[in-house]
Image 1 (cartoon, rainbow, N blue to C red):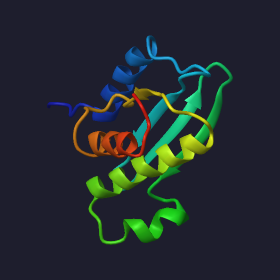
Image 2: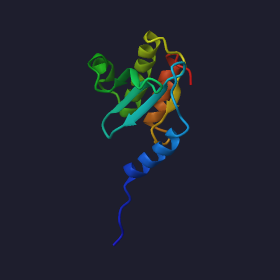
Image 3: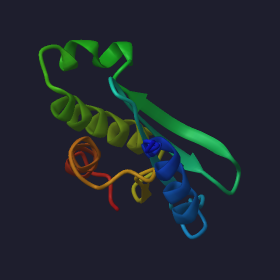
Length: 122
């Protein structure tokens, strides 16, 4: 019998390898992405203090009206714009993009483009 490989386990191993070199500082925090089947979550994290500076997701109530009738890729773009606006309020202009072990395509790429279009630099 063949065993089906666990894609999430492989993603986590890839993310662990990436995190050895990718560190968010106070000047340039880490923009972390988590993608589930139905939703996408993003956080701006300062690893030197271990604190989340701001976060956004498709579950945010203030984004609910903007997300209606959009597909997942368009929703990720809106979430990217929202995190950039929240980061600007927290006085963060530059971040290090942590894609969380996901391939840079689809929803992850759309989120990054949304964040860049709203003024976040990475």
